[in-house]
Amino acid sequence: MTSRLLSELSTMPHGIIGISASGKMGKSALAFSIAELVPGLRDRPHYLFETAQADLSCFPGFTLVTDLDDVPSGSLVIIEDLGRIFGARGSAQNQQLPRWLGVISHKGIVVIFTIQSLSDADISLFRSQNFIELHKIMWDEDLQFERPEFRESATYANLMINRFAMEHPEIPRVAMVFSPRYSEVSAWPLVSWWSDECAHFLRDVRVSETGRRSK
Image 1 (cartoon, rainbow, N blue to C red):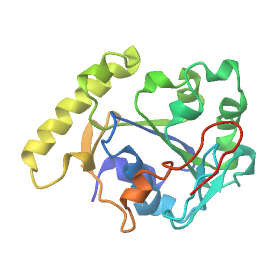
Image 2: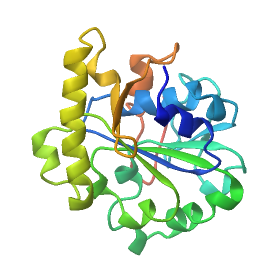
Image 3: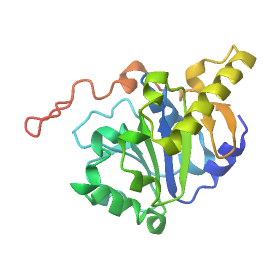
Image 4: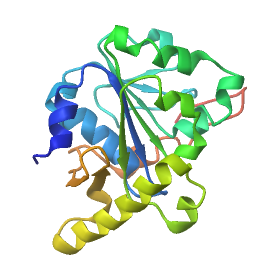
């Protein structure tokens, strides 16, 4: 696979990669494919930030971190479903994430997050660092609630992905992603170890403040 997006990701010294799409459109799979397949990112220490004590045994090479201050410099961190962990009004209650994102350029950290709609996250998170916006398919009912500044690119992403899918019917649509920065669609393979267990790794996590457990 060659693309201008891949070239930029390969030389990314720090910053944020945001993947948005409706449910079950391959956001998580893409996040881990980027981490594992991009030359400039796959050799970094890999972490997954999660507030619950999740079982990461299906993610080889990834370490669970529950405190962002524990992420070493030079690392790559995946945050699954950012809106669940740090919502649109989260900065009024918890300043840790925006403050931490404000210093990742000093620490040389790359962050990849997935989210169903960018309206679900605090807008300040996208303005603190170099932000690479990536879109997969978003359904019309989700588009109507998207932030106005991202709705146009998400709508255009649907158009471009559908056009790419018609030209390449052999490629699953969930493998396709649109980059507004380069106005291009690329198709990403799954990592060799991806499984249904990876796609549902929070299945047995208890989200209450007490009694949390992992599988």
